[in-house]
Length: 304
Image 1 (cartoon, one colour):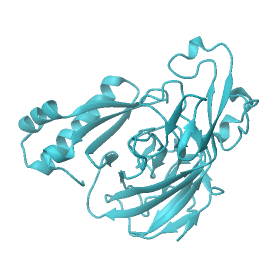
Image 2 (cartoon, rainbow, N blue to C red):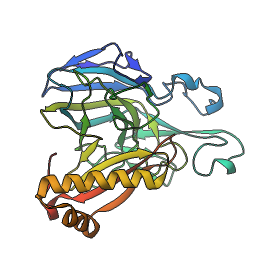
Image 3 (cartoon, one colour):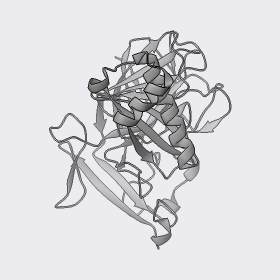
Image 4 (spheres, rainbow, N blue to C red):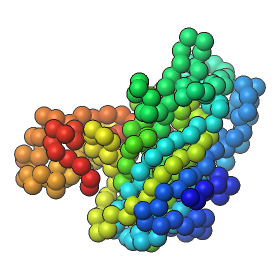
């Protein structure tokens, strides 16, 4: 099995990045990733203002997926996540929703062992959904080359990237729109734990290894990413304004319901309102990310 090392990374998604790795349609492989700080924070003495932010949010890749062509979709299944033995959370003036209340920078190192993040003596948090308590570990950045432009890995968009969406975890399938031959997949920014919103500006940021499988879905054009979990289908959209992101995610879900159920717009729209939920992935990046969840079993959904 291939192991794709963390020494080959990109800092932005575009169609001109030099290919770092090749994988086959249907291949299972491992990707090694650094944390979002590129390993610069080793202990609590290192503060966010001390690090080189120009090398933050790197993603391993680009990974050329054999057989992927423009207007296909790429399915990336997250089969497992192996986290490093420690994670980091920082606070810093201006960072996160309450950044104006943070007077000085602070770094907290959080041990990760035995399947848990040890936040404090009395608070331990499960890492993955393999544990009986639903876990919180997830992949923050996963994306492909966009249809145009050069987009920093910190910025989410129609191509994926820094969506910071907690349902992208073990057992999930991420569907991405292919805009260029080979797709040029890249991944990174593991979080041992993160709640919806990423409210303080970070999750428990950590390095690790991701076991994944890529499958090309031929002839299926997506405008934006979708995620499939055991019990839900999700459309995902990122935008500067709440109403714009929600509008796009809702429209994508209505279109998906029309395609999968055969309903006309009016009934698909009504069905969405009766059964689907708006959820917030993150509100701290340049663009905010939103998702609409449709229940798989109730609506007999699955795949794209």
